[in-house]
Image 1 (cartoon, rainbow, N blue to C red):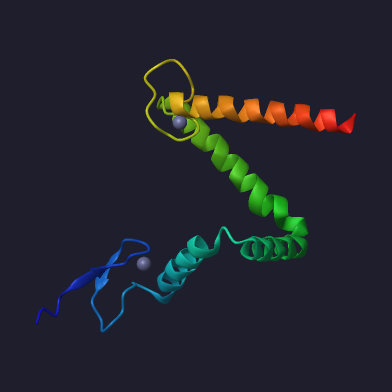
Image 2 (cartoon, protein in one colour; image 1 turned 135 degrees about the horizontal axis):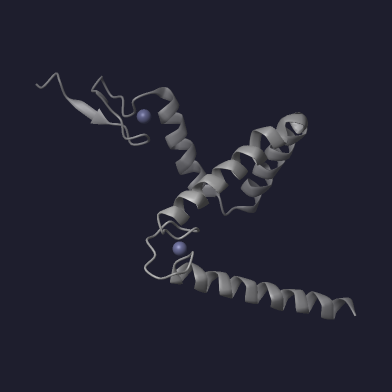
Length: 132
Ligand SMILES: [Zn+2]
Ligand SMILES: [Zn+2]
């Protein structure tokens, strides 16, 4: 029997020494991995969405003062950093694939964006029509 066997953690990809029946490098990874599976199994259920929103609202209420510092500011900064990096390296600012022409985004993302703005415009029109 090989005692130096190592396993690869399915969550973080780290190699760790094989011990008994352990599948993950740590309890945290095990929990996160299972939470991820649970999330993907239930994410489309309305009940799950409601629960998630409820929990988030509660958390936001408790952290109202810090909310901007905790969420908005870091995500804004990381967004700026990512866009800058992608622009400098000629990558699509949206998905990060290599761009071969002079645009800032790849043809797929441009098409998606076009469809998105189109449907948004159309739905705005419908809303305006309904208001009359
Ligand atoms: Zn791990
Ligand atoms: Zn793209």
